[in-house]
Length: 251
Image (cartoon, rainbow, N blue to C red; front, side, top):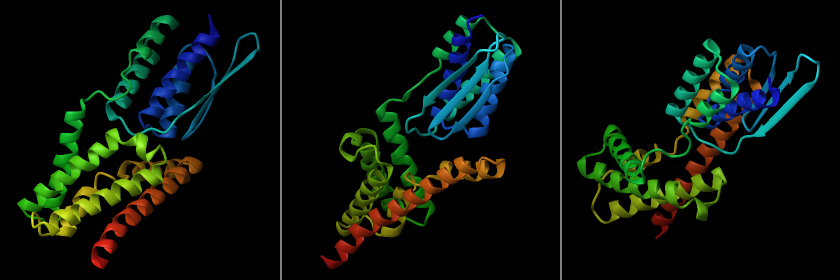
């Protein structure tokens, strides 16, 4: 058996899981179960931006592989497909080459067109604006704000950079400034509902949920990492929202 290929199989599945936003315990347990199904006794260690897997061959030779995980979001569909494939391979271990092919066929990257994603941003912000007490005109303004902020999230990363804090400040400021402008133009009346509805697409709700789940599961480092990220993003939203509002009052 080619243990290097088997180790790479576990690493690739673990990487796909982490890229989909899976919890740390899920990544470690999935890789552990997968390699155990092929007769190995692996040691798996994962933190939010790194995955480390080590196995010992029957001859006593240790093999270790490490993979750095770049910044990523949450992809529930990819997470479910990774889980399903892991269960399938654990119940019925296929030849390593066949298993690697199946892992390689897992989808990666954006699977929805920009038009669909922008529609989602717009409809989400419009709904939340209505939910927080806005009228139909406010919902329409929030939809416009959602389309603009969604366009910034999807297409302006080269300008805003990969820094989550700075990118969130820019998008929050854009949402606040545009909402203020639309109200000043008379297209909307409830500035708070429009602004809050738009900002909801920036709120890191999934990261906060995962942080609490990981802390309760004993993954303290990962939980604190995600908690710190949530606090930074919340601070960035507050700063980005406050600046246009303060400027509009002075002007």
